[in-house]
Image: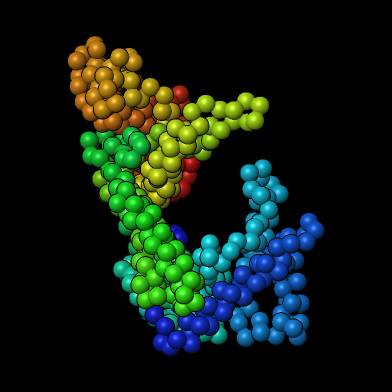
Length: 418
Ligand SMILES: [Zn+2]
């Protein structure tokens, strides 16, 4: 099984860091050199042939001092980007963005040499890998991506190592049990009533909003006086990039914590089959038929995207024993006890009160229980509905989803879908 681990790189000398920066710069150069032109022959193979010519060109002798495979692999990303733009209507032609907007870095595509906690980078030498849990150390590595964070003056290099991990070293999901999950804006609730909140970033965002103004003022002052940026200005810029890095880590980190907790609680996780892409489509409309409430919809889209539904789903797909997706219709209006469906059951956004049996619960908890029942019908409390088809996966996950409610099933262990 493939698992990724993120390590911080510690260099033995500043020369090594400088060389890594040069490799990343060469990748940018190569991407830019092949980006333009007529509809090119865009397979990685043909681009690679052209790269060999470029590398042998005396004007580009500097490329020879850098590892060939790592620089050439940029063209793999470029070829993939071209393929996407030709096959998909959404993807445009590959772009070249300002170096201030992209994360520089490079990839060691194959023949990765790992020795304990040390990594070999061709033409750079051995570097130490730090800041890790050592979970997969000793497992062979297939590929390494080396992104540079921070800025040019204070670079922080990381190594994302893709390990090939034997199945018995991967942390297994819980052996039994099932969990329904109701994903909402800003939080998710499971069928046991636990709430998984998306971290509140309001303070951090307010801070980030304030800092650039101060940084701009410092820059303006230095321009006016003809002086280099003041110590204070530099400190503010540093603080800003630090806050932005923290903001970037926050949500994925929470999604990892939550999905791990769910996978530890139950073998099977049942979620709604939500089409996030369609739900977050802009309400803008066209010039002839402009949409309504565009601004409100944009705000809602932002919080939906911030709730990280897709990320949680992807992580559950490989952490949980099985991930079941069910049709979300009426899950919030159905009573989890007597199955009565009524719009009036939902008293407020938070409160659920059944008009037939009087069952009261938090609305999200009630919905999560309904979702669980749809994915695993044998957990249905009363008047059990016989499952017509029962699947047993190699991982011993047994449930009988009915075709009417279950749209997609992915088994997290054997990867089989149905
Ligand atoms: Zn009821």
